[in-house]
Image (cartoon, rainbow, N blue to C red):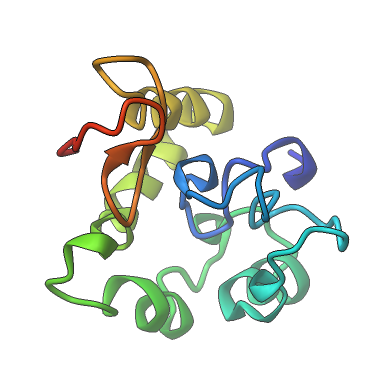
Length: 138
């Protein structure tokens, strides 16, 4: 499996394609393209641990998962803030990756974040469709 093929998926399980910055200022957490404007991924502790230290494509492949780095940044951050609901679902979402494999998981995420009204992408943070603007509850 090569992370370069799956730029829509971050090592932590986030579906990058549902981020408002995807393919605008950011090419996804797994992209190594240093010409993109969004640079915060280079300092992401989860990304660095997964790709550099553990040599894994996804956190769930690591024997230390869920580790302190993962929990601190995602599952125990922004508790109660609706904008970050996607972070608190990741432990369950990664189980689906492990069960289905990468290709089926990517299909699952694409379908999950697809607007039922127009087929556009539902963005996390605001949980609105980027195409028609309707608010969607996932």
